[in-house]
Length: 220
Image 1 (cartoon, one colour):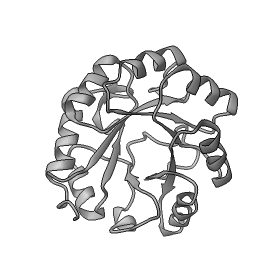
Image 2: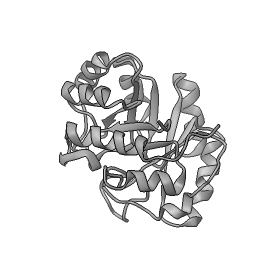
Image 3: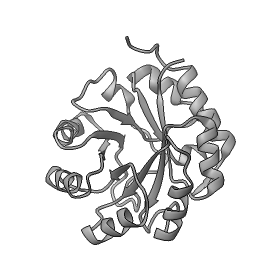
């Protein structure tokens, strides 16, 4: 079975966690951004991260968070990775990576080939890159909008760091996305929900199954 690693983001309940673990996802994403329907309080985040099964990578997603906000998040709960989904500069990414001693994943929005230069810039300072669809101008959320981009832009790309494909992925299209791009990692949020912020266990299982069973042969 192809070694495609799946991240399911925006988890809000212990039932979500159980479903993610049962599906075989590698990463569990927790959102700390008040404008998102998937936002967690510190207390909720602590409860969920403490309940996460061993081996599941716990990722805290923030958007242009201040040091004080990140201090509160990292002190309240056990985390394995920070995901920066705002306008953080490469210098800011490097600063936060050093400050917290955690691996950092930086999201880069893509709508055309000109956006790919930023992937290289952030690859110099981040541990992983999340290649996501660029949100529409004025959109309240930087991600989780259910929008995709032209996957041909990143087809067969190789960067300095591991990267993850995101943006409009669903159980119905993730196999095609993996086949076309040769992505080794994929991220989903709204694509496995029955309503904004409400995860569906069946859709999560179907997504992981489709990503892995229909993916490209494992590279040797």
